[in-house]
Length: 345
Image: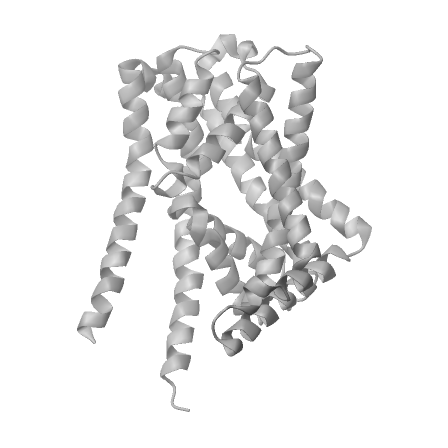
């Protein structure tokens, strides 16, 4: 038994080591890029503005919690704002603490499983949430592209903006076609050649169950669907305003030079690039990307300081506040599963 447990312990230790590197790396990297000037700029950052940024982060958690309540529509039992907030904070911690955010979906499925949701049904709910996010970003990118085409704003990296819009559009189109044609795809020859008829039927049932849950969710009253998308838009508009506030606070009297639309776009491109990072939260990739894209607005030390403040609120705060919640609810769930598995039949 000891030999069987060792890989698990090594995996847990490796995960905690990667998380520790992800926490420290942004601060060290930004200090290395900005030097003493970055530290001085951080020290002069207005405390009131930092408190406002923290309040915005807390408001974003509550907006997402309200969105989960609307998406679940009473199908997960009695779920108040506090219970939905627990799910949101635990899932966000796992999202920030794992490479490419893979732990966020797993935590969400685990917590919904405690409320009687099968993995397929919970995955469908999570997919609707992700589609809302992608639709919002596609609309924002289209708006930004239209703004640059009419010449209202002359931004750099137009090709990069257009490529991001095209990529998001293709992902949304691919998801829609796959869901629409799923029953037919499951009857195709490549799928029918999958080894093991029992395994094939089980996977097919799970996929079709998830599709039914997705359709049921999309058939919610139009007012509810509109409220879900409105909460999604409000969440991301506030969340992606954090970098603008960090830049404005670092620039001080020159804060009028900060461009909200440009900082919004910077975060979109940087966070997309951070998905390819091997460290949790895109540590390193996010800082370098944001810092490089901010240079047209500010000096090296100012850009590095803005990145540190932004990450403290948009990343480290999520870990600090979500960690205890994650350990409490996920630890309880795992202990419950283990006790159930050990119980004699």
